[in-house]
Image 1 (cartoon, helix red, strand yellow):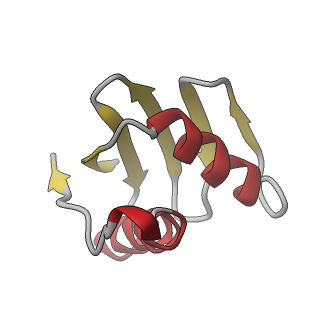
Image 2: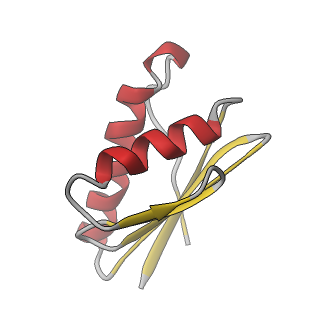
Length: 95
């Protein structure tokens, strides 16, 4: 399983975590609290954690294509939801 992580520095990490997972819950299985969450994305699971420094994200998938797709799903939605913070792109680190 391949993984990639990203961190979005914001004081609204919990808000974005909940917004993302509520949105995803319309189509896939999710579970979350104010500070942690998990989404069963089609390419592989996404795990999110909010703390005082921002929103931490980790996605996993079996293939490079799946990992790219999982990163795109999270990034595309977060960029739209965080438009007030001028987020354009996440800096993903692959493990």
